Amino acid sequence: MIRLDLWLTLVSGEKLRAAELVFGNADQQGRYASALRYTPEYLADARAFPLDPAGLPLQPGDFSGAQLNTPLMALEDALPDDWGRRLLILRHGLPRGRQSEPHLMQVLAGQGLGALSFHAPGSPPSTEAHAAGLLELDTLLDAAQRLEKDGSAAIDTIDPGTRSLLAAGSSPGGARPKVLVQDAEGQWIAKLPSRRDDVDMVGLEATSLELARLADLEVPDFRLVELTASRRALLVKRFDLTAQGGRHHMLSFRALLQAGGYYVLRYLDLIAALRQYGANPEHDVPQMYRQMVFNALLGNTDDHLKNFWLLADAGGYRLSPAFDLLPDTGARREHVLLFDLTPLAPAPAELAALGRKWGVSGAANICQEVEATVMRFAEIAAGKNVPETEIHRFEQDIARRCRTER
Picture (cartoon, rainbow, N blue to C red):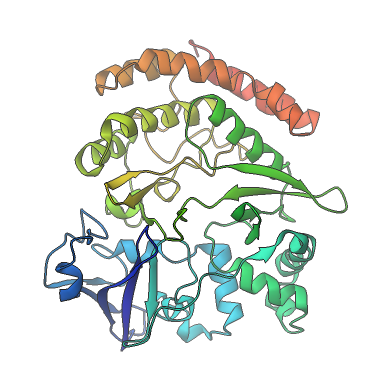
């Protein structure tokens, strides 16, 4: 059995012991029971808010589940995915029997993204996540590519570059190599090229973020940095940190919609959730719709529910900036989220009709603005030094998506 205290960092920087967690011993199939209970002092605090308004309302009693499934998916949000989880396991030398989520929470402690941290009962919250300096990026990229090539064998030597990678790269989520870095302007997630890339993923993501910004989507600050050997990294400003030295609690739409395993959901489900749980649906619903149109016309088929988040502040939950935006690099065509009844992107006129049907104000204008912006893909990509062959490939795909007739 594992017991942990869950601490919440407020936007002001103050820390509250928000809940107690209990995890049972895993059976032979790796299944275990989980439970969360808000602390009496948190329930009595005027600053308290539900960690998940759908699954974990602010009330006394136990919230129980199997593993980190419903209603405890907000806890899984605090852990890194894929790449970061792999580094976390290597960093702490966790054997196979201690790689489940409760053990990962123990070793992650307070070094994850977002406002949640996990500590032994009675232990105070720990320090913030380690962030490397920008001058270390070349070394970190070398270590990341060795790890991609050699797997855990690269860890045996524990060279300084690998040690830095394990410290700076075990907090961010996602499947691709990334690390936390900081400079005089703040803390950034540095997205690195992968050995497996067959296109300029770094340049294409920078292009997509710039197009999103021009299309009036809210995106984090970002910039490209040049490294050695004609390599580069994309820096994306962390949006969970506040100017007061605090944190925004981050809640994915996967958790909010309690979408475990294989799910079939529509963009309308996200819009409905914003109307039900969001603090500012008048702003956030058009933004979500605008992002849907952008994803459809750009070809961002990686639109799964952990690429959409809410941020909590003193006023409630609001939509996070858009991130993880890319054209259809895998030539999938089918989106994860349905637009209405299809995973294939509708034409602009059909997207406008959906917006009107869903009660989104100014839907036709939004579609026109987004379409005009994404059609600038070649211009923006050239400015980011994306190879010409790739510009031509994705420009054609975008033009096909923007046609009103198929």
